[in-house]
Length: 390
Image 1: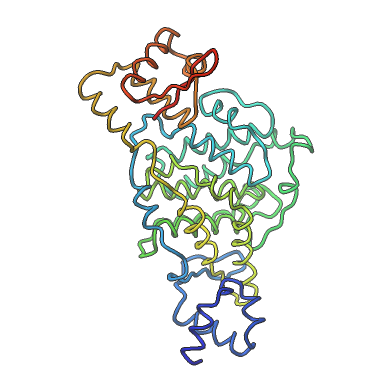
Image 2: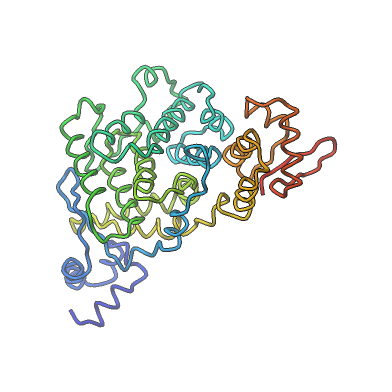
């Protein structure tokens, strides 16, 4: 194939869709093009699906994640393992992608220690347990720990048997797999296949390579999603493992950014990118995950902005702490406000209720002082004031 023809096809706006590419060019030209991609463009990944198909991607087509990497490398210094507001949004968005509706307020309360009620909230509680697990630095990514995480996300049989048909979204009543290791049974009934999956997963995570780390995490996301290790819950597992991989790679702020919010906002593109990989593999026999990586680089990593926890307020608070102007209780209240409310408004009554271990007079004195210090802003309503962290 002449260079100009290859360049024309490589630059085609339909590049990610091989069905359309094959329709636009002759069959001979398309086959030669795919052969050249295999020879000079694909970077192979050390993964295989259950059907034995190999994984690969095209580096120059995957996109850049440099800006997101710099942001995710920062750490806001939040005292809790993760900010409740951000991770409540992560859980709500991840469940929404599975067709499960649960309120942000209820999920945030569950993260703060409230008991779940009903099937959907219990799924959110499973995700809380998973977040607690991956936020612990001691839980490095090993086969044993990966299996523990999957089991945390696989609801117990008693919970499954107790759900009603109305609590079971259509998306979860179907098991449309492809190269999966799960089938219809649970993890215990597929121990051999699960073991192979866990080994491949952890070997890839812990391998030394020159793959962009954020793109590597997205490739692992696809691998879990495609392998379906816990059946209909595998979407939840893929997104949780994605966060775990980033956190263990040193991107500490990944647990302060609800990545699934961006995924959910572009859910049609997310599913289309996943489908394109499978459809193209049906033509070439190679699971080229480039469309999926490109989606994450553009629609997820590309949407990450500066973190609240690393702004001017954080610097101002650190200075006041050094000067001894903040009491221990005030520090605890400030950290709670940052974690639990984020940019959301709150009243003194709601802060007293949610914080649970401070008298109303203490809460009132806190908001007055921190407004004077320029760390809180008040919003006046007809008969009350509400506050938000700056």
